[in-house]
Image 1 (cartoon, helix red, strand yellow):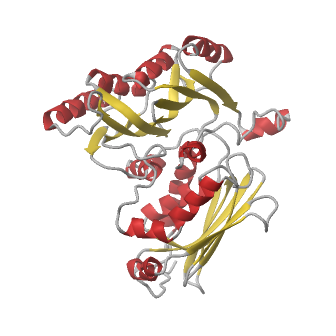
Image 2 (cartoon, rainbow, N blue to C red):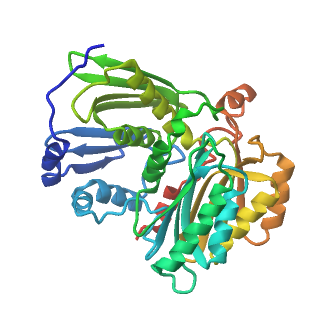
Length: 418
């Protein structure tokens, strides 16, 4: 297939007018009965988003609306241009001084427990963390500080010792023919979801072929030669942050999204993206199209977790994460995805779990776990069954379906914003 070229414009130049004249933001709760309309209007574009909260209701909380207007409006653009807007910091608010640890390795049962035990033994407090697993690989970002001073650790010898011990734990689960596990230290913040996508993408997790949770998305790519675009169509089960995950991956692959149409009906989503490569070209080969499809499939599946989720809330203390993950390991549970955050003196931990073989966890195991840790912290246990089984069993009214089981740090936003 011949290459299709289109006049190329430097994205930085194209964004100049947006930085000078940032879009105005309007929140409309009257035009549509079922959702809130968020409209961004600028000299070059008009973007309209039909949004709901995690429960499928309109966004009516004044603090949440103010936050949306702040981030998407002129103040948000000004902060971003000065590199002072932190994005999501594995939690809701600024975490103060901290050291960021990035881990990529082969996943295995008990790994998160061993990592958190090493940090506890070295007197590091885990302030927040987020971990994803996909295709037998794990990517994790942890924010830690000194358990006595609550400040970032900048002692080179101490950091070197921590990195060495973590690498020993990670190398213990690698095989000779696999990619090397690694730990990276940095001072500062990052948008954690975006960073986890980047880490797994760089680790080429999309190359492995394994059993996935949920249904397989249908992705097609065609060239629109008269307009000079490649058109990416995605049809899959809908879920929160689906568009974010797809756009992040396209951006990391050096594609620019010029137009997009996003729709959802019930539990199904249809998304269409008109893209070009950063150099102005469309996708010019079947091999390139196949690679994009594999990468998008991986991006969609990384955040999907069927089965049990455990939401635990307790007063924060040094070693809490190590204690909780040890208990999970002792009950034969493997963590497939995790989110840890600290709000004031309260620690909120969310774990998606399977058994050591990757199968659904027996109800008796969950009840035993609830009995052991329920006395020391609040625990909420939820089960999400695959949508196909959900439909077959007719469980639409039982709360055992798709959308009511996931925990997101954004749920805390409404309570914590000043």
